[in-house]
Amino acid sequence: VLCGPHGSGQTVKAANQLIVAINIQACAEAVIFLEKSGVDLPAALDVLSGGLAGSTVLTRKKDNFTHRDFKPGFRIDLHHKDMGIVTDAARTVGAALPVTTLVTTLVASLRAQGDGSLDHSALLRGVERLSGHTTEN
Image 1: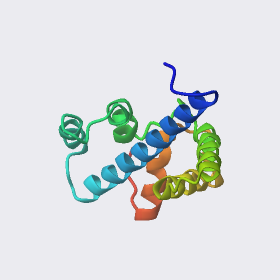
Image 2: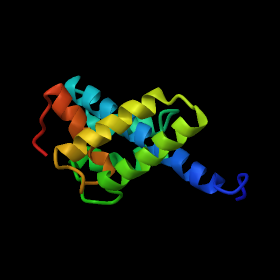
Image 3: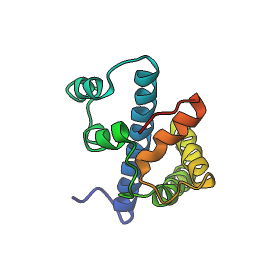
């Protein structure tokens, strides 16, 4: 799909990575909120998947979240690189991306903690650490 002049494809790819990272972070926060509230996580994620909160990210990463399975798919290291591309491009065009900036920092934090080789759904690990939340999985 032609999205504009030369370079537009790279910009669309960067926007995709921005949306995916923010969506994974939102899902990770919801998982911890649900678990700390004593809610049946698999049931709750099924309910959420069927409503407006549903997304391809939630559908594809649901098992990663419930089973804490962070085998590499799309690695944190690669998402970190892509978030750098988003941040640089946004700065160049003068676009303020406050939530993206925060999620970029959280991705960088995971890398600094040695989680760079894990799947990007491991953003859940960062929320767990911030919440003092551990699971048996």
